[in-house]
Length: 225
Image 1 (cartoon, one colour):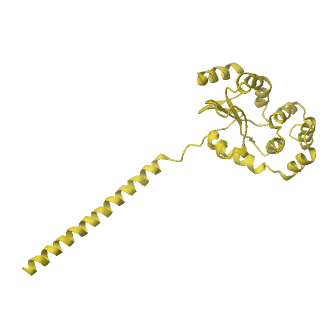
Image 2 (image 1 turned 90 degrees about the vertical axis):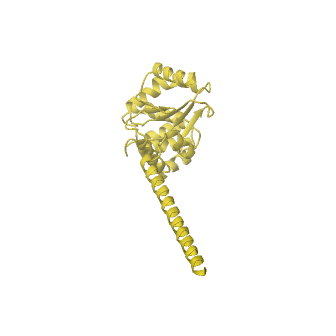
Image 3 (image 1 turned 135 degrees about the horizontal axis):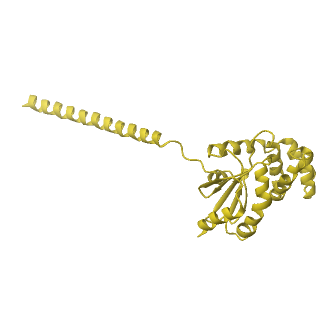
């Protein structure tokens, strides 16, 4: 009798062990498939708006931050098409959509090359004094002046014309205070698909090129409505 009881106990123990082993294997299989699924998803898609929201000190904004329509601009101060956009199209967009709080406009300071990196650094130095957008306009206007364009003398003249604190501005220039920020912005922009300037993201839609006001108007009105 005792022998049969012992045998039953041993059988029960074996059954319990097999159940434990089976449970461990099942959990392992589930974990393996979960890891495989995550690896197949690939990296999370980078959005420049998300980047700027996570790093507000690296981007400059204006307009209605609560708007459902957000435009992210990526321009280069040595780009003639960017200059044309700022001279011809942006003033109309500002008047109709930005100043009326219809949209939120986000600029991601950027440089296509080491040649234009100091200009973006200078613009961010001007931003310390609340003059980013006015200063950007001044830099784009300087493109037609070969003596001043993309030079320290040009950067300082633009700052002086806006009445900036020149001691603070010049120190910021000399420090290259925002060079690393602009470089990181450029890397992020390329990861998001930017390969030329100007490039715009109207919410999630990328628009590459200095399109006329009518094209922006059509796209923005569709998003607003």
